[in-house]
Amino acid sequence: MVMGASGSKLEKALGDQFPEGERYFGLENFGNTCYCNSVLQALYFCIPFRDQLLEYYANNKTPGDAEENLLICLADLFMQVSQSKKKTGVIAPKRFVQRVKKQNELFRSYMHQDAHEFLNFLLNELVDILEKESSAEKDSPQSSSPEKVPNGPVQPLANGVRKEPPVTLVHKNFQGILTNETRCLRCETVTARDETFLDLSVDIEQNSSITSCLKNFCSTETLNAEDKFFCDKCCSLQEAQKRMKIKKAPHILVIHLKRFKYIEQLGRYKKLSYRVVFPMELKLSTSDDVDTEYSLFAVVVHVGSGPNHGHYVSLVKSHNHWLFFDDENVEMVEESTLQTFFGSSHEYSGNTDHGYILFYEGLGGKS
Figure (cartoon, helix red, strand yellow):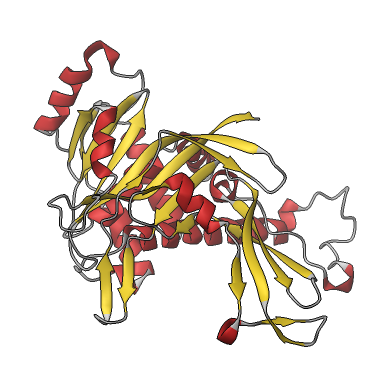
């Protein structure tokens, strides 16, 4: 483990204010793995997620010959940071990165990768592992107590009804529920379908804000021409109105700004450098008029003018201080620095550092 110069500088900068028991470590870059490092820092400082993952690790330490998975590699990395004797320094997340590349060929090359795709892949992979473990525990004979099940295995449920999948530590922290509502304009029948989400991907506009992006996300659109909706009641394609509503707000709200847009005329993706203001505090209203207050604690920033090249860094709030993580380097920054990552109000600006993924934590108080 290397003690970087930036480490000792950071300790000097924080001085007596260095938070008790906290650790600030840079992560080594293994040839274009900044997309991974920036997301890992944001997740590490998502405290409820970190605590639950470390608790899981403490209770599920696998024997040396057990099958290693991404969950164990992530928990082990978090453990290395949190249990380090030094307060600052650099850690090489080699085992974790190797596991990511083994699991998903998308991340095997040294090409520029997308941090949001990586976050999605990682959270879904963790869910799969935890759900498999949970169903394996239920199916194992030891897990069924003899009093409750006198005749061996539990009988399958009548009518083939399956029990709900387990609520994993990923769901507890990141999962919300959207309601997709479609109203047929002929018979007025409303079809509503609930779907879960771990993050919200929102379209962006020039000189806008996260609040207006979320309003647009939930705005009504008309389905007509080729987009007509098949209404079950009318038994035919009809014009309809469709809207998304947030039914249940997650504890950790992750917002992905769709900065990469496919331009038909160019035949390729282009990066939108639009100025989109993200506030430190955010209020999210659900369909039953419950407001959840959120506080920003991490931002993953894409640095670069195009989608196929560039760099990722992250800014993280820890114990009321903002820290800037750029692979191995960690430094303290003022909160006002975040404004430099909103984007540019005109297209050809020299600034190419733009907020890309925002992490908000629910303040618990619901009004």
